[in-house]
Image (cartoon, rainbow, N blue to C red; front, side):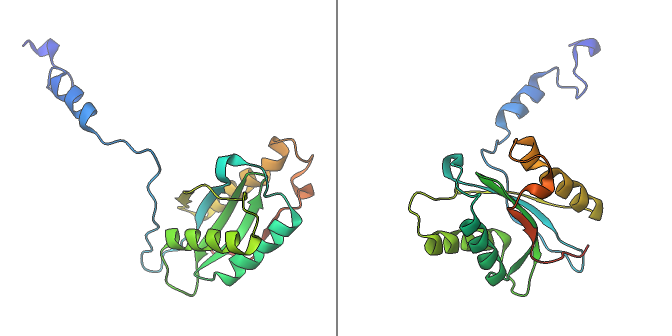
Length: 171
């Protein structure tokens, strides 16, 4: 094979195609939050209702979520935004050592038990991302705060009643 026929990796195209076919693909994002030493940890979490049914934007739901998040102190909820069919929240490790994914499953199950509305269910999984620097928290919060405006629910972010902050999360 002439040098001009070789791909950049020198395989002539054969090896790179084989490698692409054998790479695993994910249907869901990887989960888990690694806590290392004294480095600050803030996680941006999104949880959706099952089938994206819009039942979350309700005073009773809001109050119950705040109560449950306050009681489930393994992870501390900072700022949060409750939309009709999903929730965005920022969390940091709390007083009890519990893996992040277990905490999410726990508070979701507590909500379902206490809420008691059979067709109000959560999607099985969730989406999370560990923030890498303090600017990320501010930037992400401003983006999240604008959600009700982008969805045409209010004119100004401050007009949306289903948002708040339970704990100030230090960076």
